[in-house]
Image (cartoon, rainbow, N blue to C red; front, side, top):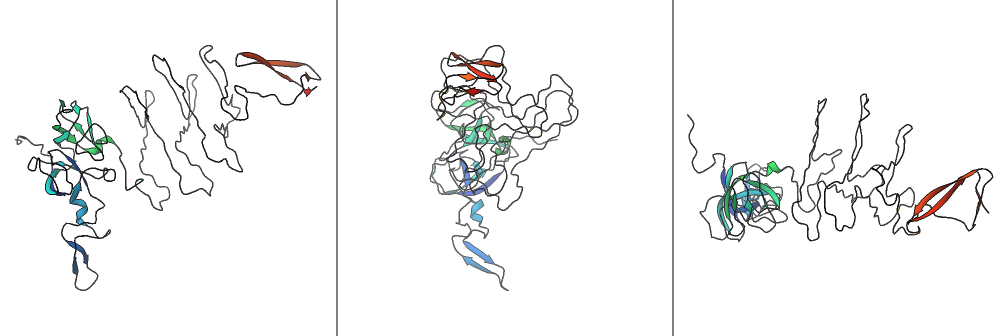
Length: 382
């Protein structure tokens, strides 16, 4: 016969820590480890086991590399540097209303359902609660650490609700001092990997689905990303190789025999039903080149099309639409030496073309005016 549980999740684990901050202590308040402190707790700077008789050095600090216990005892309010070192939330109301520094108990984030202090309007099993720089609340933002286990509106009167305290359920959050975690001298280092094999013969297979909904009314300056690929190469480049912020690669094998099959390395798609009163630009793909200096040798392109090993491809660019959709096929704006809206620029000063044999003219539309490109054998200017 099992023992009934009353009042507390049996998975909740409570430990004692020392709160170094000066904020008013509240039940469910989040704290982070002071992971980079040199202040210790036991008053011992180091233990020397290298001599015949071991020795203790008394001090309030312990140098880095000497296993300072203060790193897992001392906690403080979340800030920009320690937000990745989440320790847990204040357990109980023993010190509620008091201010630090003070020894307190906290619930560690191990998946238990515990009281968490928030300023959010929550929906059970839906609202994500996070920690942020300078905040003593688990709010609806910042680094996710919990998910609400109750429905309540604490946006006006902040307080504690039950929440599942477990940062691991929200995926990867990796951060170190300054710019982030550092891999030293590791060849072929991989921070995170997902390697999946799908043996499906029909249906849908997906290695990673990122589904992001921006549901707020975007009335001010804004940025949203479903996926952001950002790579900084700061050490210079002297060897051959590739630096890629995002690589989309599709490897095909086996026999392909389907008139309806479409294969692509990257598919940029913009869809939706909107009331489009005014918009600066809508594009399925934007490619921007913004280096401060072009290479002295080699090429620089905004878009580089490369048929690597392909045999008899149909086209480098295939423009397709349901009927006459585009106002122009190709448009140039702000391109320096090129005239506005010109695909082919006339060179030379002659006013007439002559040809030794038959010739044809190809019509093009430039800004609403029809022009003609002459084509034939051995064209020369008169």
